[in-house]
Image 1: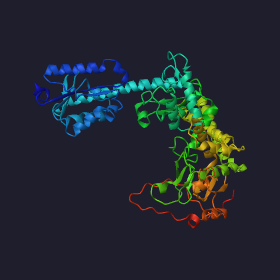
Image 2: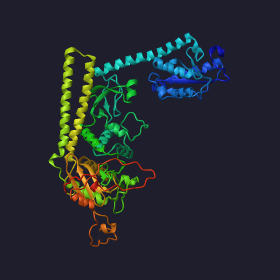
Image 3: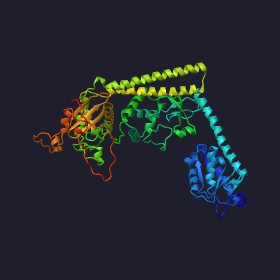
Image 4: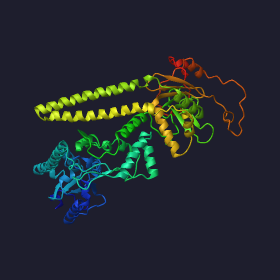
Length: 589
Protein backbone atom coordinates (compact mmCIF):
# COMPACT_ATOMS: atom_id res chain seq x y z
CA UNK A 1 0.00 0.00 0.00
CA UNK A 2 2.78 2.38 0.90
CA UNK A 3 4.58 1.77 -2.37
CA UNK A 4 1.42 2.34 -4.43
CA UNK A 5 0.86 5.65 -2.66
CA UNK A 6 4.48 6.68 -3.04
CA UNK A 7 4.93 6.81 0.74
CA UNK A 8 7.89 5.63 2.83
CA UNK A 9 7.16 2.68 5.20
CA UNK A 10 5.86 3.67 8.69
CA UNK A 11 8.90 2.11 10.37
CA UNK A 12 11.32 4.50 8.65
CA UNK A 13 9.08 7.52 8.07
CA UNK A 14 8.73 10.64 10.18
CA UNK A 15 5.27 12.22 9.90
CA UNK A 16 4.73 15.89 10.73
CA UNK A 17 1.91 18.29 9.98
CA UNK A 18 1.90 21.90 8.85
CA UNK A 19 -1.03 24.09 9.89
CA UNK A 20 -1.60 27.74 9.07
CA UNK A 21 -4.22 30.45 9.01
CA UNK A 22 -3.86 33.98 7.64
CA UNK A 23 -5.48 36.18 10.26
CA UNK A 24 -4.88 36.16 13.98
CA UNK A 25 -8.63 36.60 14.42
CA UNK A 26 -9.00 33.04 13.15
CA UNK A 27 -7.24 31.85 16.32
CA UNK A 28 -10.55 32.26 18.12
CA UNK A 29 -12.18 29.83 15.67
CA UNK A 30 -11.57 26.16 14.91
CA UNK A 31 -9.14 26.39 11.98
CA UNK A 32 -6.15 24.80 13.71
CA UNK A 33 -8.29 22.22 15.51
CA UNK A 34 -9.82 21.16 12.18
CA UNK A 35 -6.43 20.83 10.49
CA UNK A 36 -5.00 18.86 13.42
CA UNK A 37 -7.96 16.46 13.45
CA UNK A 38 -7.52 15.73 9.75
CA UNK A 39 -3.82 14.98 10.26
CA UNK A 40 -4.51 12.57 13.15
CA UNK A 41 -7.28 10.85 11.22
CA UNK A 42 -5.01 10.28 8.21
CA UNK A 43 -2.30 8.78 10.46
CA UNK A 44 -4.79 6.34 12.07
CA UNK A 45 -6.13 5.24 8.70
CA UNK A 46 -2.68 4.62 7.17
CA UNK A 47 -0.83 3.22 10.18
CA UNK A 48 1.50 6.16 10.85
CA UNK A 49 2.24 8.04 14.06
CA UNK A 50 2.15 11.83 14.01
CA UNK A 51 5.18 13.53 15.57
CA UNK A 52 3.32 16.33 17.30
CA UNK A 53 6.46 17.92 18.77
CA UNK A 54 8.06 18.31 15.35
CA UNK A 55 4.88 19.58 13.66
CA UNK A 56 4.88 23.17 12.45
CA UNK A 57 2.26 25.90 12.96
CA UNK A 58 2.11 29.42 11.45
CA UNK A 59 -0.73 31.39 13.10
CA UNK A 60 -1.59 34.69 11.42
CA UNK A 61 0.89 34.33 8.54
CA UNK A 62 -0.27 34.92 4.98
CA UNK A 63 0.61 32.44 2.24
CA UNK A 64 -0.26 35.10 -0.37
CA UNK A 65 2.45 37.51 0.79
CA UNK A 66 5.02 34.77 1.60
CA UNK A 67 5.07 35.88 5.24
CA UNK A 68 4.92 32.23 6.32
CA UNK A 69 8.19 31.63 4.44
CA UNK A 70 10.01 34.89 5.15
CA UNK A 71 9.09 35.15 8.83
CA UNK A 72 7.25 31.97 9.72
CA UNK A 73 8.04 28.36 10.52
CA UNK A 74 7.55 27.09 6.96
CA UNK A 75 10.70 28.93 5.91
CA UNK A 76 12.60 27.12 8.66
CA UNK A 77 11.13 23.83 7.47
CA UNK A 78 12.10 24.56 3.87
CA UNK A 79 15.71 25.34 4.81
CA UNK A 80 15.90 22.13 6.85
CA UNK A 81 14.71 20.15 3.80
CA UNK A 82 17.27 21.81 1.53
CA UNK A 83 19.98 20.97 4.09
CA UNK A 84 18.99 17.30 3.81
CA UNK A 85 17.57 17.01 7.33
CA UNK A 86 14.09 15.79 6.33
CA UNK A 87 14.76 12.61 4.35
CA UNK A 88 11.82 10.11 4.50
CA UNK A 89 9.56 12.78 6.03
CA UNK A 90 5.83 12.93 5.33
CA UNK A 91 4.43 16.47 5.55
CA UNK A 92 0.65 16.61 6.06
CA UNK A 93 -1.18 19.75 4.93
CA UNK A 94 -4.91 20.33 4.68
CA UNK A 95 -4.58 21.54 1.08
CA UNK A 96 -2.03 23.19 -1.18
CA UNK A 97 -3.43 26.62 -0.30
CA UNK A 98 -2.20 26.10 3.26
CA UNK A 99 1.27 25.59 1.85
CA UNK A 100 1.23 28.41 -0.70
CA UNK A 101 -0.92 31.06 -2.37
CA UNK A 102 2.06 32.52 -4.18
CA UNK A 103 2.29 33.07 -7.94
CA UNK A 104 2.69 29.79 -9.82
CA UNK A 105 6.46 29.93 -10.36
CA UNK A 106 7.18 30.71 -6.68
CA UNK A 107 4.63 28.16 -5.45
CA UNK A 108 6.07 25.36 -7.56
CA UNK A 109 9.60 26.30 -6.54
CA UNK A 110 8.52 25.85 -2.91
CA UNK A 111 6.95 22.45 -3.63
CA UNK A 112 10.00 21.22 -5.55
CA UNK A 113 12.36 22.39 -2.80
CA UNK A 114 10.54 19.96 -0.50
CA UNK A 115 9.89 16.92 -2.70
CA UNK A 116 13.33 16.97 -4.35
CA UNK A 117 14.92 16.72 -0.91
CA UNK A 118 13.14 13.63 0.39
CA UNK A 119 9.85 15.12 1.65
CA UNK A 120 6.47 13.67 0.66
CA UNK A 121 3.68 16.23 0.85
CA UNK A 122 0.21 14.81 1.48
CA UNK A 123 -2.87 16.99 0.88
CA UNK A 124 -5.51 15.79 3.34
CA UNK A 125 -8.58 17.04 1.44
CA UNK A 126 -8.01 14.48 -1.31
CA UNK A 127 -5.42 12.18 0.33
CA UNK A 128 -2.95 12.58 -2.57
CA UNK A 129 0.80 12.22 -1.95
CA UNK A 130 3.18 14.52 -3.82
CA UNK A 131 6.84 13.56 -4.07
CA UNK A 132 9.59 13.08 -6.62
CA UNK A 133 8.08 9.72 -7.63
CA UNK A 134 4.40 10.70 -8.07
CA UNK A 135 5.23 13.96 -9.84
CA UNK A 136 6.90 12.01 -12.66
CA UNK A 137 3.34 11.33 -13.85
CA UNK A 138 2.17 14.00 -16.31
CA UNK A 139 -1.34 13.84 -14.84
CA UNK A 140 -0.09 14.43 -11.28
CA UNK A 141 2.27 17.13 -12.48
CA UNK A 142 -0.48 19.05 -14.30
CA UNK A 143 -2.91 18.60 -11.40
CA UNK A 144 -0.40 20.08 -8.94
CA UNK A 145 0.17 23.04 -11.26
CA UNK A 146 -3.54 23.72 -11.64
CA UNK A 147 -4.17 23.41 -7.89
CA UNK A 148 -1.35 25.78 -6.97
CA UNK A 149 -2.44 28.24 -9.66
CA UNK A 150 -6.05 28.17 -8.43
CA UNK A 151 -4.97 29.00 -4.87
CA UNK A 152 -3.09 32.10 -6.02
CA UNK A 153 -5.87 33.22 -8.34
CA UNK A 154 -8.47 32.96 -5.58
CA UNK A 155 -6.40 35.12 -3.22
CA UNK A 156 -5.66 37.61 -5.97
CA UNK A 157 -9.35 37.90 -6.86
CA UNK A 158 -10.24 38.60 -3.22
CA UNK A 159 -7.42 41.12 -3.00
CA UNK A 160 -8.66 43.01 -6.08
CA UNK A 161 -12.24 43.09 -4.78
CA UNK A 162 -11.17 44.43 -1.38
CA UNK A 163 -8.79 46.93 -2.95
CA UNK A 164 -11.51 48.32 -5.20
CA UNK A 165 -13.89 48.54 -2.26
CA UNK A 166 -11.43 50.49 -0.12
CA UNK A 167 -10.33 52.69 -3.04
CA UNK A 168 -13.93 53.69 -3.61
CA UNK A 169 -14.44 54.36 0.11
CA UNK A 170 -11.31 56.53 0.23
CA UNK A 171 -12.29 58.52 -2.85
CA UNK A 172 -15.81 59.12 -1.52
CA UNK A 173 -14.52 60.10 1.92
CA UNK A 174 -16.41 57.30 3.67
CA UNK A 175 -15.43 56.55 7.25
CA UNK A 176 -17.48 53.46 7.94
CA UNK A 177 -15.18 51.23 5.87
CA UNK A 178 -12.20 52.03 8.08
CA UNK A 179 -12.44 50.89 11.66
CA UNK A 180 -9.03 51.69 13.14
CA UNK A 181 -8.23 54.99 14.83
CA UNK A 182 -5.73 56.39 17.34
CA UNK A 183 -5.93 54.95 20.84
CA UNK A 184 -7.48 58.06 22.35
CA UNK A 185 -10.57 57.68 20.12
CA UNK A 186 -13.37 55.13 20.12
CA UNK A 187 -16.86 54.65 18.69
CA UNK A 188 -19.68 52.21 19.27
CA UNK A 189 -20.23 51.33 15.59
CA UNK A 190 -18.53 52.24 12.34
CA UNK A 191 -21.32 54.74 11.66
CA UNK A 192 -21.09 56.40 15.11
CA UNK A 193 -19.08 59.58 15.71
CA UNK A 194 -15.69 59.40 17.39
CA UNK A 195 -15.51 59.88 21.15
CA UNK A 196 -12.37 61.31 22.78
CA UNK A 197 -10.94 59.60 25.84
CA UNK A 198 -9.94 62.76 27.70
CA UNK A 199 -7.59 60.93 30.08
CA UNK A 200 -5.55 59.63 27.15
CA UNK A 201 -5.85 62.95 25.28
CA UNK A 202 -4.34 64.75 28.30
CA UNK A 203 -1.39 62.35 28.17
CA UNK A 204 -0.89 63.12 24.46
CA UNK A 205 -0.88 66.84 25.21
CA UNK A 206 1.69 66.27 27.99
CA UNK A 207 3.92 64.48 25.46
CA UNK A 208 3.71 67.43 23.05
CA UNK A 209 4.32 69.98 25.81
CA UNK A 210 7.41 68.15 27.05
CA UNK A 211 8.67 67.94 23.47
CA UNK A 212 8.13 71.67 23.01
CA UNK A 213 10.04 72.23 26.28
CA UNK A 214 13.08 70.42 24.90
CA UNK A 215 12.67 66.80 26.01
CA UNK A 216 13.42 63.89 23.70
CA UNK A 217 11.48 60.67 23.29
CA UNK A 218 13.43 58.68 25.88
CA UNK A 219 13.18 61.40 28.51
CA UNK A 220 9.44 61.72 27.94
CA UNK A 221 9.05 57.95 28.22
CA UNK A 222 10.99 57.92 31.48
CA UNK A 223 8.75 60.65 32.94
CA UNK A 224 5.64 58.77 31.77
CA UNK A 225 6.78 55.58 33.54
CA UNK A 226 7.80 57.45 36.71
CA UNK A 227 4.45 59.21 36.96
CA UNK A 228 2.33 56.30 35.74
CA UNK A 229 0.80 57.93 32.67
CA UNK A 230 -1.87 56.00 30.81
CA UNK A 231 -0.66 54.52 27.51
CA UNK A 232 -2.62 56.53 24.89
CA UNK A 233 -1.99 54.31 21.85
CA UNK A 234 -4.09 51.42 20.66
CA UNK A 235 -1.27 49.15 19.53
CA UNK A 236 2.03 48.66 21.30
CA UNK A 237 4.88 46.22 20.84
CA UNK A 238 5.69 46.41 24.57
CA UNK A 239 2.62 44.63 25.89
CA UNK A 240 0.61 47.72 26.80
CA UNK A 241 3.55 49.54 28.41
CA UNK A 242 5.44 52.69 27.51
CA UNK A 243 8.56 52.16 25.41
CA UNK A 244 11.28 54.55 24.29
CA UNK A 245 9.94 55.03 20.75
CA UNK A 246 6.31 55.64 21.72
CA UNK A 247 6.56 59.42 22.36
CA UNK A 248 8.25 59.84 18.98
CA UNK A 249 5.46 57.90 17.27
CA UNK A 250 2.84 60.09 18.98
CA UNK A 251 4.70 63.29 18.05
CA UNK A 252 4.68 62.31 14.36
CA UNK A 253 1.00 61.36 14.31
CA UNK A 254 -0.99 64.15 12.65
CA UNK A 255 -4.21 62.54 13.87
CA UNK A 256 -3.80 64.76 16.94
CA UNK A 257 -4.68 67.65 14.59
CA UNK A 258 -7.72 65.77 13.29
CA UNK A 259 -5.89 64.85 10.08
CA UNK A 260 -6.16 61.41 8.52
CA UNK A 261 -4.07 60.11 5.64
CA UNK A 262 -5.36 57.01 3.89
CA UNK A 263 -2.55 54.51 3.33
CA UNK A 264 -2.43 51.56 0.96
CA UNK A 265 -1.99 48.46 3.13
CA UNK A 266 -1.65 45.76 0.48
CA UNK A 267 1.03 43.11 0.86
CA UNK A 268 3.07 44.77 -1.88
CA UNK A 269 2.84 48.18 -0.21
CA UNK A 270 3.69 46.81 3.22
CA UNK A 271 6.64 45.04 1.64
CA UNK A 272 8.06 48.48 0.78
CA UNK A 273 7.28 49.98 4.21
CA UNK A 274 5.67 48.53 7.31
CA UNK A 275 3.19 51.44 7.39
CA UNK A 276 2.15 50.82 3.80
CA UNK A 277 2.17 53.37 0.98
CA UNK A 278 0.60 56.80 0.96
CA UNK A 279 -2.55 57.10 -1.13
CA UNK A 280 -2.08 60.86 -1.37
CA UNK A 281 -5.54 61.39 0.15
CA UNK A 282 -5.36 63.61 3.25
CA UNK A 283 -8.53 64.59 5.09
CA UNK A 284 -8.70 67.38 7.65
CA UNK A 285 -11.25 67.29 10.49
CA UNK A 286 -11.49 63.54 10.01
CA UNK A 287 -10.95 63.01 13.75
CA UNK A 288 -11.64 65.31 16.72
CA UNK A 289 -8.62 67.57 17.25
CA UNK A 290 -6.82 67.23 20.60
CA UNK A 291 -3.65 69.35 20.01
CA UNK A 292 -3.52 72.99 18.89
CA UNK A 293 -1.60 74.16 15.84
CA UNK A 294 0.61 76.28 18.08
CA UNK A 295 1.63 73.33 20.28
CA UNK A 296 2.21 71.12 17.23
CA UNK A 297 4.43 73.76 15.58
CA UNK A 298 6.36 74.38 18.83
CA UNK A 299 7.01 70.66 19.15
CA UNK A 300 8.16 70.34 15.53
CA UNK A 301 10.52 73.31 15.91
CA UNK A 302 11.92 71.80 19.11
CA UNK A 303 12.46 68.42 17.43
CA UNK A 304 14.28 70.04 14.51
CA UNK A 305 16.52 71.86 16.98
CA UNK A 306 17.29 68.68 18.91
CA UNK A 307 18.47 66.84 15.79
CA UNK A 308 21.93 68.19 16.45
CA UNK A 309 22.75 65.48 18.99
CA UNK A 310 21.71 62.16 20.45
CA UNK A 311 21.33 62.87 24.15
CA UNK A 312 22.44 60.35 26.75
CA UNK A 313 22.47 62.85 29.63
CA UNK A 314 19.00 62.10 31.00
CA UNK A 315 19.29 64.81 33.70
CA UNK A 316 20.26 67.49 31.14
CA UNK A 317 23.31 68.62 33.10
CA UNK A 318 25.16 69.15 29.83
CA UNK A 319 23.34 72.25 28.60
CA UNK A 320 25.82 72.54 25.70
CA UNK A 321 25.17 69.00 24.46
CA UNK A 322 25.72 68.79 20.70
CA UNK A 323 27.09 72.35 20.55
CA UNK A 324 30.57 72.15 22.11
CA UNK A 325 33.71 70.98 20.29
CA UNK A 326 37.38 70.73 21.10
CA UNK A 327 39.35 73.76 19.93
CA UNK A 328 42.45 71.63 19.38
CA UNK A 329 41.06 68.91 17.10
CA UNK A 330 37.35 69.55 16.41
CA UNK A 331 36.03 66.44 18.19
CA UNK A 332 32.91 66.72 20.40
CA UNK A 333 33.43 67.64 24.04
CA UNK A 334 32.19 65.15 26.65
CA UNK A 335 31.01 66.13 30.10
CA UNK A 336 31.38 63.99 33.20
CA UNK A 337 29.15 65.61 35.82
CA UNK A 338 30.06 65.77 39.49
CA UNK A 339 27.25 66.99 41.73
CA UNK A 340 29.59 67.51 44.66
CA UNK A 341 32.90 69.33 44.58
CA UNK A 342 33.99 72.68 43.26
CA UNK A 343 34.70 71.64 39.66
CA UNK A 344 31.11 70.41 39.03
CA UNK A 345 32.44 68.03 36.42
CA UNK A 346 35.03 67.55 33.73
CA UNK A 347 34.90 68.87 30.16
CA UNK A 348 37.02 66.53 28.01
CA UNK A 349 37.69 65.98 24.31
CA UNK A 350 35.96 62.83 23.04
CA UNK A 351 39.11 61.77 21.21
CA UNK A 352 41.13 62.10 24.41
CA UNK A 353 38.59 59.90 26.21
CA UNK A 354 39.00 57.26 23.48
CA UNK A 355 42.80 57.48 23.55
CA UNK A 356 43.45 59.28 20.25
CA UNK A 357 44.77 62.57 21.63
CA UNK A 358 45.99 64.29 24.79
CA UNK A 359 43.93 67.47 24.41
CA UNK A 360 43.71 69.22 27.81
CA UNK A 361 40.59 68.64 29.92
CA UNK A 362 39.05 71.26 32.19
CA UNK A 363 36.56 71.76 34.97
CA UNK A 364 32.94 72.52 34.10
CA UNK A 365 32.74 75.42 36.53
CA UNK A 366 35.35 77.36 34.52
CA UNK A 367 33.27 76.97 31.35
CA UNK A 368 29.55 77.13 32.26
CA UNK A 369 29.31 80.58 33.87
CA UNK A 370 31.58 82.49 31.43
CA UNK A 371 29.83 81.02 28.43
CA UNK A 372 26.32 81.74 29.71
CA UNK A 373 27.30 85.29 30.66
CA UNK A 374 28.82 85.92 27.24
CA UNK A 375 26.01 84.29 25.24
CA UNK A 376 23.18 86.09 26.99
CA UNK A 377 25.04 89.40 26.96
CA UNK A 378 25.57 89.23 23.20
CA UNK A 379 22.71 91.03 21.42
CA UNK A 380 22.12 89.32 18.07
CA UNK A 381 22.33 91.67 15.13
CA UNK A 382 19.28 92.52 13.07
CA UNK A 383 20.49 90.04 10.45
CA UNK A 384 20.02 87.09 12.82
CA UNK A 385 16.82 86.05 11.01
CA UNK A 386 17.98 86.63 7.43
CA UNK A 387 18.69 82.96 6.64
CA UNK A 388 15.47 81.85 8.29
CA UNK A 389 13.54 84.59 6.49
CA UNK A 390 14.91 83.28 3.21
CA UNK A 391 13.83 79.74 4.14
CA UNK A 392 10.31 80.99 4.94
CA UNK A 393 10.18 82.95 1.69
CA UNK A 394 11.28 79.84 -0.21
CA UNK A 395 8.61 77.79 1.55
CA UNK A 396 5.99 80.40 0.61
CA UNK A 397 7.13 80.27 -3.01
CA UNK A 398 6.99 76.48 -3.03
CA UNK A 399 3.48 76.57 -1.57
CA UNK A 400 2.26 79.08 -4.17
CA UNK A 401 3.75 76.98 -6.95
CA UNK A 402 2.17 73.81 -5.60
CA UNK A 403 -1.20 75.55 -5.13
CA UNK A 404 -1.07 76.71 -8.74
CA UNK A 405 -0.39 73.13 -9.89
CA UNK A 406 -3.35 71.89 -7.85
CA UNK A 407 -5.63 74.53 -9.39
CA UNK A 408 -4.47 73.63 -12.90
CA UNK A 409 -5.06 69.91 -12.38
CA UNK A 410 -8.46 70.61 -10.82
CA UNK A 411 -9.48 72.80 -13.77
CA UNK A 412 -8.35 70.11 -16.22
CA UNK A 413 -10.34 67.42 -14.42
CA UNK A 414 -13.39 69.69 -14.51
CA UNK A 415 -13.04 70.07 -18.26
CA UNK A 416 -12.08 66.58 -19.44
CA UNK A 417 -13.31 64.35 -16.59
CA UNK A 418 -11.59 62.32 -13.84
CA UNK A 419 -8.88 60.51 -15.81
CA UNK A 420 -6.83 58.13 -13.66
CA UNK A 421 -3.54 59.85 -14.41
CA UNK A 422 -4.96 63.26 -13.49
CA UNK A 423 -6.63 62.12 -10.27
CA UNK A 424 -3.45 60.33 -9.18
CA UNK A 425 -1.45 63.48 -9.86
CA UNK A 426 -3.96 65.56 -7.89
CA UNK A 427 -3.68 63.20 -4.90
CA UNK A 428 0.11 63.45 -4.94
CA UNK A 429 0.12 67.25 -5.26
CA UNK A 430 -2.44 67.66 -2.47
CA UNK A 431 -0.33 65.51 -0.16
CA UNK A 432 2.86 67.44 -1.04
CA UNK A 433 1.07 70.75 -0.45
CA UNK A 434 0.04 69.58 3.01
CA UNK A 435 3.65 68.66 3.80
CA UNK A 436 4.79 72.15 2.70
CA UNK A 437 2.24 73.72 5.04
CA UNK A 438 3.52 71.71 8.00
CA UNK A 439 7.15 72.57 7.16
CA UNK A 440 6.28 76.28 6.89
CA UNK A 441 4.53 76.18 10.28
CA UNK A 442 7.69 74.73 11.84
CA UNK A 443 9.81 77.49 10.24
CA UNK A 444 7.46 80.18 11.56
CA UNK A 445 7.61 78.62 15.02
CA UNK A 446 11.43 78.63 14.84
CA UNK A 447 11.39 82.31 13.84
CA UNK A 448 9.05 83.23 16.70
CA UNK A 449 11.00 81.19 19.23
CA UNK A 450 14.32 82.67 18.11
CA UNK A 451 13.62 85.79 20.13
CA UNK A 452 10.97 84.72 22.64
CA UNK A 453 13.05 81.75 23.79
CA UNK A 454 16.08 83.96 24.58
CA UNK A 455 15.52 86.05 27.68
CA UNK A 456 17.92 88.96 28.26
CA UNK A 457 16.49 90.07 31.60
CA UNK A 458 18.75 90.84 34.53
CA UNK A 459 19.64 87.91 36.75
CA UNK A 460 19.17 85.32 34.01
CA UNK A 461 22.72 83.99 34.26
CA UNK A 462 22.58 83.76 38.05
CA UNK A 463 19.24 81.94 37.83
CA UNK A 464 20.59 79.51 35.23
CA UNK A 465 23.72 78.74 37.24
CA UNK A 466 21.64 78.10 40.34
CA UNK A 467 19.77 75.37 38.42
CA UNK A 468 22.73 73.75 36.68
CA UNK A 469 23.81 71.33 39.40
CA UNK A 470 20.58 70.66 41.34
CA UNK A 471 18.97 67.21 41.43
CA UNK A 472 15.22 67.72 41.20
CA UNK A 473 12.54 67.65 38.50
CA UNK A 474 12.06 71.43 38.40
CA UNK A 475 15.77 71.99 37.84
CA UNK A 476 15.86 69.24 35.21
CA UNK A 477 12.96 70.91 33.38
CA UNK A 478 14.78 74.23 33.53
CA UNK A 479 17.99 72.72 32.11
CA UNK A 480 16.06 71.03 29.28
CA UNK A 481 14.46 74.34 28.38
CA UNK A 482 17.80 76.16 28.70
CA UNK A 483 19.48 73.65 26.37
CA UNK A 484 16.75 74.21 23.79
CA UNK A 485 17.20 77.99 24.02
CA UNK A 486 20.94 77.69 23.56
CA UNK A 487 20.55 75.28 20.63
CA UNK A 488 18.24 77.75 18.87
CA UNK A 489 20.70 80.60 19.33
CA UNK A 490 24.18 79.01 19.16
CA UNK A 491 25.66 77.13 16.22
CA UNK A 492 29.02 75.98 17.69
CA UNK A 493 31.18 76.49 20.75
CA UNK A 494 34.91 75.74 20.49
CA UNK A 495 36.74 75.30 23.79
CA UNK A 496 40.43 75.44 24.69
CA UNK A 497 40.16 74.46 28.37
CA UNK A 498 41.53 76.96 30.90
CA UNK A 499 42.22 79.43 28.10
CA UNK A 500 39.44 80.55 25.81
CA UNK A 501 36.12 79.62 24.14
CA UNK A 502 34.76 80.90 20.83
CA UNK A 503 31.01 81.03 20.21
CA UNK A 504 29.46 81.01 16.72
CA UNK A 505 25.83 82.17 16.65
CA UNK A 506 23.16 80.94 14.24
CA UNK A 507 21.87 83.06 11.37
CA UNK A 508 24.68 85.57 11.75
CA UNK A 509 28.40 85.77 11.08
CA UNK A 510 29.00 87.06 14.59
CA UNK A 511 31.48 85.23 16.82
CA UNK A 512 32.59 86.14 20.30
CA UNK A 513 35.74 85.38 22.26
CA UNK A 514 35.14 84.23 25.84
CA UNK A 515 38.14 84.17 28.19
CA UNK A 516 38.13 81.23 30.62
CA UNK A 517 39.62 81.13 34.08
CA UNK A 518 42.99 79.42 34.36
CA UNK A 519 43.53 76.28 36.41
CA UNK A 520 43.72 76.76 40.17
CA UNK A 521 43.37 74.60 43.25
CA UNK A 522 39.77 74.49 44.53
CA UNK A 523 40.88 75.76 47.95
CA UNK A 524 42.25 78.90 46.30
CA UNK A 525 39.58 79.37 43.63
CA UNK A 526 36.54 78.83 45.89
CA UNK A 527 36.26 81.57 48.50
CA UNK A 528 33.68 79.52 50.41
CA UNK A 529 35.94 76.49 50.75
CA UNK A 530 36.71 75.42 54.33
CA UNK A 531 40.46 75.71 53.82
CA UNK A 532 40.34 78.71 51.50
CA UNK A 533 43.60 80.58 51.17
CA UNK A 534 43.86 83.75 49.15
CA UNK A 535 46.05 83.07 46.14
CA UNK A 536 49.46 84.64 46.32
CA UNK A 537 49.97 87.51 43.92
CA UNK A 538 51.27 86.17 40.65
CA UNK A 539 50.68 86.56 36.96
CA UNK A 540 48.34 84.12 35.15
CA UNK A 541 50.12 81.35 33.24
CA UNK A 542 50.78 81.85 29.53
CA UNK A 543 47.62 81.35 27.47
CA UNK A 544 48.71 81.49 23.83
CA UNK A 545 45.31 80.56 22.39
CA UNK A 546 43.58 83.37 24.30
CA UNK A 547 46.22 85.83 23.10
CA UNK A 548 45.76 84.63 19.49
CA UNK A 549 41.98 84.94 19.77
CA UNK A 550 42.28 88.50 21.09
CA UNK A 551 44.48 89.34 18.10
CA UNK A 552 41.93 87.77 15.75
CA UNK A 553 44.41 85.12 14.64
CA UNK A 554 43.03 81.94 16.20
CA UNK A 555 41.70 79.45 13.65
CA UNK A 556 38.93 77.05 14.62
CA UNK A 557 38.75 73.41 13.46
CA UNK A 558 35.79 72.00 11.58
CA UNK A 559 33.43 70.23 14.01
CA UNK A 560 33.36 66.48 13.38
CA UNK A 561 32.34 63.17 14.87
CA UNK A 562 34.57 61.46 17.41
CA UNK A 563 37.03 58.87 16.14
CA UNK A 564 36.63 55.18 16.94
CA UNK A 565 38.62 53.96 19.92
CA UNK A 566 42.03 52.79 18.64
CA UNK A 567 43.42 49.33 19.30
CA UNK A 568 46.84 49.46 21.00
CA UNK A 569 47.42 52.93 19.58
CA UNK A 570 49.54 55.44 21.45
CA UNK A 571 47.95 58.79 22.29
CA UNK A 572 49.23 61.82 20.49
CA UNK A 573 48.10 65.37 20.87
CA UNK A 574 47.29 67.02 17.51
CA UNK A 575 49.24 70.07 16.41
CA UNK A 576 48.01 73.43 17.65
CA UNK A 577 45.74 75.26 15.26
CA UNK A 578 47.55 78.53 15.79
CA UNK A 579 49.48 77.93 12.57
CA UNK A 580 47.77 74.85 11.06
CA UNK A 581 44.88 76.66 9.38
CA UNK A 582 44.23 80.05 7.88
CA UNK A 583 43.42 82.53 10.63
CA UNK A 584 39.88 83.82 11.01
CA UNK A 585 39.19 87.37 12.15
CA UNK A 586 37.20 87.19 15.37
CA UNK A 587 35.45 90.22 16.92
CA UNK A 588 36.01 90.60 20.63
CA UNK A 589 33.12 90.29 23.07
